[in-house]
Every structure is written in structure tokens, then in C-alpha cells.
Amino acid sequence: MGEKQLVVRAIYLDYNATTPIDPAAAQAMLPILYGHYGNPSSSHEHGQAAKKVVEKARSQVANLLGCPAEEILFTSGGTESNNYALKGAAMAYRERGNHIITSAVEHPAVIEVCKWLQKQGFRITILPVDANGMVQPQDLANAIDDNTILVSVMHANNEVGTIQPIRKLSDLAHKHGALFHCDAAQSVGKIPVRVDDLGVDLLSVAGHKVYAPIGIGALYIRNGVRLEKFIHGAGHERGLRAGTENILEMAGLGAACEEAWQNLDENMAHYRQTRDRLEAGLLRRLGSALVRVNGHPEERLPNTSSISFFNIEANTLLDAIKERVSASAGAACHAGDVQVSAVLQAMKGPVNWAMGTIRFSTGRRTSVEEIDLVADLVARTVFELARKGLDASVHPTG
Image (cartoon, rainbow, N blue to C red):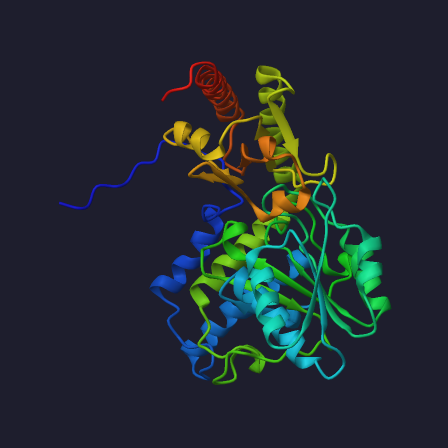
């Protein structure tokens, strides 16, 4: 007898964490699983067939970003792309300066790299954000100097969805001769991401955020930008990244990017409809005294709802609904100590709101019916938790 298939019945609202593989991506991977087993570096027929798969995928990624195919480097994911961009640029341009600027709301794949670079002698400046999680161009203007070699600011935040004014920031960086890197892991496939419109020199893509498999990503490198490579070996990926190409997942990423480009407007409208319906439903059921939506009111990912519930512990709420809804917490409570995420800390919201922050992120498969079920369930659960908290304060134990 075969193994029993795991059946998950919870409504999935954690698309910012990872996405299912798009059917087109899965279909593109099947021939590699069963036929194209050649090494793309080999000159024989099998190798050249595999190479064609790689170059087709590279063109598909480039088309989504609006750049030449030769400016796309395949990586193992967003984390590697960010590491390569920051470490590679820092080491390649350190003769010109040692100053790197980033923001307080970056993903650990950027923040932790900056901490490592600081230990290597680089000077790191962390820009603050406003209450909506947005970097102000004036803060960058105040921080940048003649020794600045790189500025790295994400396109859209993974927790609250705020979209940064990348073009204004990249123009400032270039005015001072610095490179600009953008972590676009959360924005690619959800909103238009065109490298020339953004004015970036380096841009990171994570495959599993765009309905491609886990374990594949890409780094856009503008022609003329130098990067010190940190994976050494043979001359794969035009000598930039050693290691035999992962053609299976490259094919999946390419197809996923093509699907994202062809259906971008339709998907954006669907994301926005489900996000707005969830937020409106919770506000209608609970009221503004119990519910607050985080992030910029307008410049925000169309699928991302960071919602704070007043005086409710996020993990307690998630635990109560975990069999029905899959979502993520923005805060955790341990032994009475509230641990708020770095993003929420940077936004400086009140703790009694921040402690109850849940991120709901919708996707292509999210239905209006599911949204209504989640709004009902969450509202009922919040009312129950609020009542228990009130009862405990009126009738304390011990």
C-alpha cells in the first residue's frame, strides 16, 4: 500500500511566506525530470538541449523584469541573491569607499549580511522608516556621502506590504556615485517590477514567492556592474557562479515568470479584491477600536494585510484558528514578554497594538468565499479572547 496523502483543510493566507507551484511551472519541469538530463556545459547534443532550457528560462525572467537576458544570474533563491549583491558589490568597490546604507525594515537576508560586512570593516548606516514603514528620501540624502558605495532598500516589505519610493532613492544613490540594490522578493509577480523604471543596478528575485519551486532565484546585474564572486569553481553562469546549473528549477522559474507577466493585471485586481474584502470585513465585524491595518494606506502590496488586534496576543489568536487558517504572526509573547518583529519596532507602533499583529497574504487561489469565512472566524475568536482577557482582569486567579 502507498503512503496516505496528507490533506490540509486550512485556508491558506500565507502567500508571502511561500506560494504553490504554478501548473505552467510544473509542466515546464516535467520534460527535465524525464528527458533533458544533459549538463548545460557539455558540447554534445544532450548538453546543448539542456543549455537551451537554461537560456529560455533566463529570457523569461528577463522579460518580466524588462532587461536583457545576459543581465540575469540564476541563484538558489532570494537569500543567495541578496548575499551575492551585497557582499559582491562591497568587495568589488571597497577601493572606492566602505559605506553601505540600508533600511530598518529589511529582510534578515540583507540585515544579517550588513552585520557581517560591518565586521569586515565596512561602515553601515540603517535608515529609519515612518509610521507606515516607508523610507523617506530625505533621510537617505542626509546619510549618503562620498564614501557610500552601495544602498540597499527592499521594494516592498514582506510583513506590512509597504512599497518603497525606489526610483527617488536610486536617483539619490546614483547622484553620489553609489550602486543601488533592491530586494524585490515580495514584489515580483504582484506589481510591475521593471528595472529601468526603478533605476536599480542590482535586484533580487525569489522563485518560491512567484509560484516557482523552492530553491531557485535570480539576481539582476546591470551591465557594467562589478561583483566579487563568492562561490568558486568552474565557469558556470558566465563565470559568475560556480556549480552545475539547476535546469529543473530554472525551467520552473522561467515558466512562472512568464505566467506572472502575462496575467499581472488580472492577478493584481484579484489580490486587491481579496485583501480589501478581508480588511473591510474585519473592520465591519470588530470596529476600529479592535482592528488596525498597518502599512502605507496607498503604496502597499495588493495582496498583503498586516492587521493588529488591540490587546490580543498574536500567537494566541493564531493558535486558536490554526486548524482553519494558515497565516503569520508579527509578534510573539514568551513568559509575559512581548517580542515584536523588527519591522513593527521600526514603525514604532504602540505595543498593545503591535503585540496582536497578524499578516494575512492572499494569492491566486484565494476565493471571496474563503475570505468571508476567515473574517467571520477571526472576528468571533477575537471577541472570545477579548472577553477572556476582560474576565481575567476582573477576576484574577491566585
